[in-house]
Structures are given as C-alpha cells and as structure tokens.
Image (cartoon, rainbow, N blue to C red):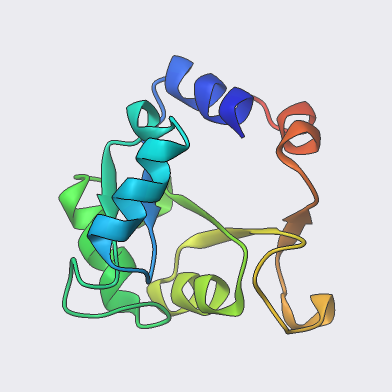
Length: 124
C-alpha cells in the first residue's frame, strides 16, 4: 500500500481515511503503520454526525477536503464502504479480501485484489 499511496501523493491526489472506528484509534493505527504522511484528512466514526453506510460521513469528508463528488473515488473493502459510496453517489472501487461477508456478486463495481495490481491498471 505504501507504493500506491506514494504514487498518489506524487501526483498531487488528495487522500483521506474514512473509518467507522473511533478517530483517535484510527489515527493511532495509521501512525503505527507509518502512513500518516499520505493523508490530508483522517476521520473516524465519531468525527462527523453519521457513520458509514449513511452518506453523511462521506459528504462531510468531501466538504472538509473542499472537493466535488465527481472528482472523488472511494476505495473500500466492506459492504458498509460500498453502500456509503452508493448513498453518497461517489464512485467506488472494492478491495477484495477485505472485511465483507457479502459475495462478490453483491458489489456492482470494479474490484481489485492487491495494490500492486491496481498500480499497473491506473493511469496516474
């Protein structure tokens, strides 16, 4: 994931984290993973009024980042992520082998297995 995030940052792409875990715990995990430098915003389930899959979390995050939904891509690994993107009307990409119990057929979106393969298939 480090190579993927490094490439996005190098290309001036804004990156954020939207987790349903508490914000302070999310920040601790990201800091221990040495990935904090890549993220413009890190939010948790208690940062905004609503959590995923409610659209409020992504809508508030997009507003905080001063972006338009049409310029966003939400990458997630669960049905809550997918449903939040649908509810917010934001493009979504599913990371397979994540935290979902739903079958792949449930997700009507593009999917990828690992960040290395994703890097080969994106044009940034």
